[in-house]
Length: 204
Image (cartoon, rainbow, N blue to C red; front, side, top):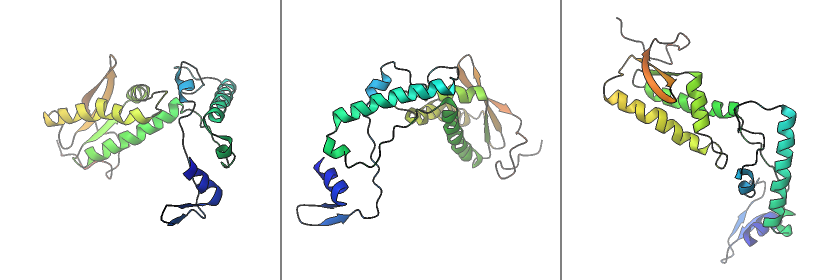
């Protein structure tokens, strides 16, 4: 705490030997999980939770209510002399379903890049993406579990099927959601994939 006070007040840090680290022209960004417990204890803040989209006005009201609770908790947790030295406090909006799906797309693109190096391509249905977004989101940890969800439900089982010889060089793989489980099937190469995205498939 005292180190942060010196940094924010004087713009530098000095150790016991008199060595100084200058923070001139530096933007210091600090994150905190203060208020996280309040958010996760069943309180709906109008973000990802729930399957149906909410009205924008209702979402904004829920966010403002959550923001006030978090700011109150912040004041109870940190000393006034510390908060007085902070230029601004930002309470982020919770990730929406569509934003989580965008992260899913980025992660699947990385998987596809690895498959492309082996002469294969992966195409996922929207149902699969929705399933990954739902399974990989946690109100307490945000999108952090998404990486593990993609690995557990896409990368690991697909790697096993490749090792078993079900898919090989030149195959396009389609991921579908069947009875709540992701399965993989051979599929035609999608027209939207360019030659740069997928190596040429063997004739016949």
